[in-house]
Each structure stands twice: as C-alpha cells, then as structure tokens.
Image (cartoon, rainbow, N blue to C red; front, side, top):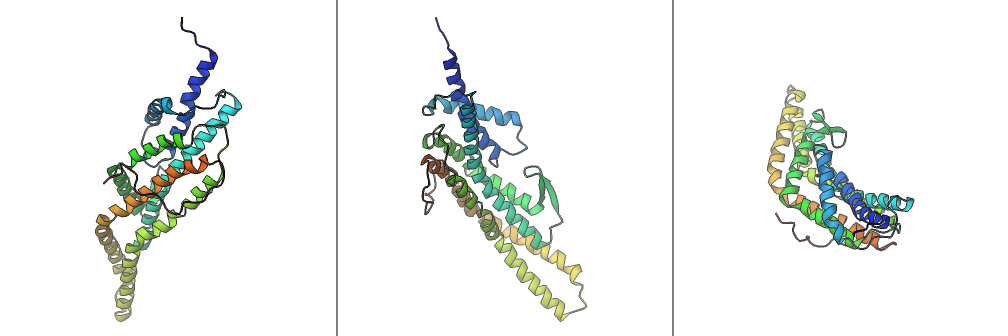
Length: 280
C-alpha cells in the first residue's frame, strides 16, 4: 500500500515552489516574457511548465519546511535572483529606448509621445519604434531561448539554498545599469551628429538670408534629416544589438556564479565569447 507522509508532501511542494519562484521572477522582469501584452495566465503557465521540467534536475534542496519562515525566506531569495537576471536583459532594452528618446529630442519630436504600458510612463515615437526593432532582433537571434538556457543553468551554478546570497551581486547589477546611458548615447550618436551638422547649416543659411523663416523651414528639415538617417542606420544596427544581447545574457549568466561564491569576488575583466545557440 502506498503511504504518503507530510514530509513527502513538503518535499514535493518545495521541489516545485522554490524553482518556480526564480522562474516566475525572471519571466516578470525580462523584457519579452514580462511584457504587459502577455496575459498573466500565460506567464504563470509558462513558469509552471519550465519548473516542472527543471525541478527533477535541480540539485538537492535544503530540508526546510516550505511553509515555515525559513522556507519563505528561501522563496524571497529565489525571487531576488530571478529579478536580477531579468533586469540584466531589461537594461539593454532601456538603453535602446534611451537612444530613441535622445534622437526624438534632437529631431524635434519630443512632443510625439505615447503611453508605455511596460514602464507606466510616456515614451517617444522613435523610442517605441527602436524598442520594437530590438524586440524583433531579440527573437530573430534566439536570445529568448538562450536566456531560458541561462536560467536553467543557474540552478546548477547557484542551487537553491538557505544560505543568504552575497550582496555584491546587486552592486554589479547597479554598475551594469550604467550601460543605459553609455549605450543609449552611442546608438543615437549618428542621428545627433547629422542633426548637429544640419542645425549648423541652418544657422549659416539664416545668417546669410535673414528674410528666411527659420521656424518655418527648420522643423521639417531636421525632421526629414532625422528620419533619413534612421532609415540609413537601421541595416547596421543588427550586429551592435546582437552584441548587446550577448552582454546582457552573459551578465545574467555570471550573476549566479558570483552569488555562488557566498563572498566578494573580483569583477570579471571581460565577458566570455558568444554563448552557444545565439546565432543570427
């Protein structure tokens, strides 16, 4: 006769609950899976499906009652790990959106804004366009699959444990957030440079012919030049965006390794080469 004890039930609950917490946190924080257009039921179903596949291969978890205070702290810790890994990728998309904001302000399209349900704030038209381009590039190079692979790998590099994780990993995540500003400026630099030359030319033209109405001809010229430069630079954004995705995924892959040390570790000098599976 088959007998099931309360310890067995707790073990089954813990074996599914703790991996599920990390997986759902990454799904909620990642830019593609966590999009507000994706229904919550789909996100939960995807998380449960991944947790069901991953749970049998997860290393031995601590013998802790999942409904106790220690078990709830483990759930909270797993959620923090998943959120940190998801934010590593979201920072890349935030950098692309910042490039669109800088381009819009330089072109004079700062008034053309939309409500962004992802960030619950306003977003410019160029920023929305570049965000969609980044999303399509993210899917075309199978970066979403590599991200899930890094998530599954994290259960081996940083197993579920009751030992608190080292807080230095969060500082590395904060340092990684600086890529929003540097990458945003780099991506928008061709547009800014072209519009700077255009504005200088308009200034010289106005100085030579004061009777021209600068406000009448300046806006359509700067807008047209900005759109032309965007159309010209789009074919060359494939490789930079792919490198950004690689850096973001490698950052998410390195964070569990940092926390697995349970102590301060040196910041890696360089990121590894392209992970397997991320191909154009």
